[in-house]
Amino acid sequence: MDRYIPPLARRLTGRGWFDLGTVLVALIWYAVAWPTLHLTHVVPVAAQPLIAASAAFPVLLVRINPALGWAISAGSALVIALAIPHQPNNELPFQVVHVLCLLVLLFAVALRAPGAIVAIALTTTALLFGTTMQGEQEAGADTALGWPVALAVLVLFGLLIRKLALSRRQLLRQEEENELERARRAVLEEKARIARDLHDVVAHHMSLVVVQAQTAPYRVEGITPGARAEFESIGATARAALNEIRGMLGVLRSDGRLPEHAPQPKAADVIDLFEGARRAGVHIEWTVEGSLDAIPATTGLALYRIAQESLSNASRHASGASVQVDIAVHSADLLLIVGNGPGGSARSISNGGHGIEGMRTRAAAVDGDLMAGPRDDGGFEVRARLPFAVPDTDTIALRAHTDSEL
Image (cartoon, rainbow, N blue to C red; front, side, top):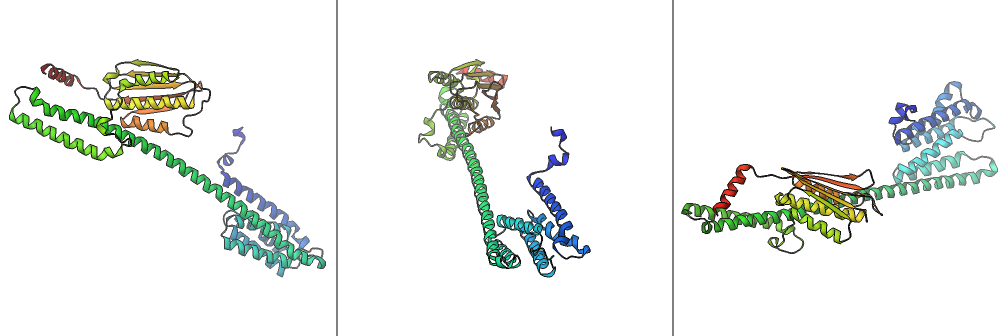
């Protein structure tokens, strides 16, 4: 069907179609006004095209500048009514096309122009119509009163539509701002949660550094005074760094617990998470390829939180659906796949919540990536790749040698 549509029509927007329709209306009005002008007014042949253009073409400004179009149309109507005599059998001071053009432009002024210009346009048009369209002598009073009332109703209708359009536009803008604010708040909350988790992880390892530095002189024989002083310096530096981290990130905690008393989940804890979900009634199966104990704490925490959020989303948005979790631990990264089938009340996870953005933030925090989207069977799938650094062979050998000496 699209191949029968001209290329220009495919590129037209809503305003383009409106402008095209306006041009067509102006041409039709002009085609009507010019041939019929000699029937209504006594006009030289050479002036007929110009007078017909003043009656029809001001409507071309209906979207660009309706106030200017109305002023041109009203001014030309006044000139025609006062300066050009009309035929004896014609009671209208100007053509019907001119009347229609004035009414359309007045309605457009009510829709878009400032209030003062709307009042001026209404008053002037009412005076123009009321004083020039007297009709028959016995109906003159009714005509003089009827036109202002009709024009006032037309303007009030335009103002009502304008008010409704503005209210709807403001409502849509407010909804967009609220949605952006909710998304921004969700991302900030997730970042704050990551910062709290990072605080706990760093605090744990820094505490181990302090303990090892302080106890090394008592665990290792033959420590020289210089090495003892070096260990004390390491311990003091680690304690200072730990205190600064607590000062900067400890305020992010909202549960009131001390950071050192808030252990965070590890990669191996996802098994307990899966078993808890199964006890809660979730139809869940899982497979684990590789050792979860080899995953560093930061990556393991991201794995746990992403799996936790994925199960939560599956429970909320696809109640009763079966969930399959696959974890594959490789040499330098791990792959997490959480998929669920269509549930009894299945709907897109992306509607209404920001859990997926939080999971993406989690994955990005460890330099990973996450993809989430619907499956062909109507279910939903979350796929995350989380890289982690693996100690090289020399580091492993040195660690084993140190442990054997201790």
